[in-house]
Image (cartoon, rainbow, N blue to C red):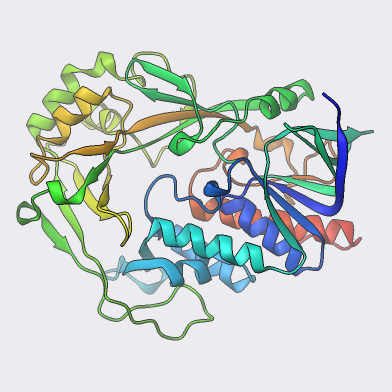
Length: 402
């Protein structure tokens, strides 16, 4: 295919998830001509898993991102539908702000911010290769043959590299939420000698809220006094939406145990390693066999949809088993699933290949951020994106890294 140069930039960010957004904004706000490329603009700041920002440990990261000029705290203050301060029975050092997000609004507000940011261009395009000359990155090549040159590149590809979905015995190549995976870029990174690892994560089913019986659950309202995430906001007042608490039981666990062999996790199809703090329900039932129940939170996905997120029930079980065990849970007896749960496996880099600045040790001016670095979580990704963006600018300016 013929390649053609379309433009030149100071910094190019590959990916527009939580890491990519913070990296692109930091670069542009520090005065660099910046291009952000996303495989699909619907993936901008996508909350692909839980509809929330913050929580234990994570809320602290959002505050630090905000203090350093990042956008996550500002954006969630525009898009939250419930706010709660966790761990208030303990000392203030472990108080953790957590908000439920309207997924669509969060995406749209961040996209609007990117589109209006001076020095920043946001475009849809699949990067399939890097331009590397004498161990120094010089730009990117798109699937269409378009070439964009740059002095620095930030890899923030999330869970898209050679991503594969697992739903029981069913396996297919796909990114999260049915978006396209990035196969060619992953293969080229491997060709360049990147030490890529295989990681996995998962997400629970989404159900129609109108098919649930909330009388059998415990209401979880938001805090009366709302604490904003961003230091830019003194006070926010909204009509909050409740979440709901219910529990698995022995019948739930029986269905899961009887179908261990049909789980992609236990059936051997999944090669990747998962985050320790985010186990699937079949993993919890197996590892914590002494527990007679596990808590489940029903979380609304937004104000413009009836979809709810079944927190605590991620799984790689087939759809028929999912329906069977979900319906054993009080309040979920008649649920209708609109999006089945799935596990997703993807390539990420061995983080030992990176400097503490998040620059690659062997390829100069190539920075890496987010889940591509082997971490998990929106907030962790955003924090890394901010640092990568700042350090890329500082490097180009001949200054010491942050």
